[in-house]
Length: 261
Image 1 (cartoon, rainbow, N blue to C red):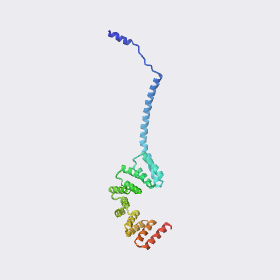
Image 2 (tube, rainbow, N blue to C red):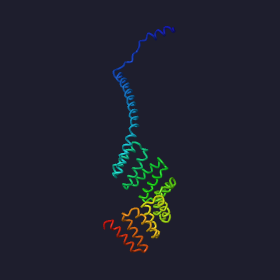
Image 3 (cartoon, helix red, strand yellow):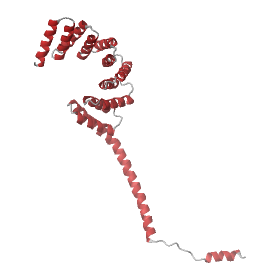
Image 4 (spheres, rainbow, N blue to C red):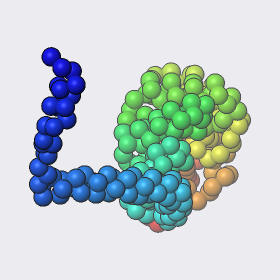
């Protein structure tokens, strides 16, 4: 065989053209358009993402500020909506969770409050205020062991926090340990000598039969706010139990006068 002849035969073969239809051309155009559109969409998405990152903190702060104002005005439902909006935009906005938790407490919704205070503690496990607030929400649910545990946690973080001792004392009293509760209320009174702590310690003294100590605490509470009728009625009860019928009648009369009887 002649190699050169073979080459010539192959060269002389007619060129076979693959037919290109209008559909092929249209398909190619569509492919190119799709590529350009995809690229344009990607650019737009990047731009939107960048804008969202800039806009979200501003929008979140505006929603938070609005919620704070509504909370102060005791418009709880609207406040909760604004704090929820803040959290949607910035899920780790710790103060939004804290304040929404307080709104839920005000709305007598301890389960929702506990969830928000728990989120605060996930973000900051050393937040003693969140521990105490969650503890009081546990009290609302009569979950005294959980309230006690949160009080212990708060005290371990801040041993000078009066409300933590008030919480632990209240939980201890509910769990049946009035004597230990008095010790905690005494710590609370020393750190925060307010009406509530005097009243709660006085009530615990009454449980223990220590009427004179109860009377002394009710008197201290009245010195802080003499316009509270329930303090007179509580002291009247302690005075009656201690044998002071006249003093009890005087307190009842004073309480009724304030109460408009």
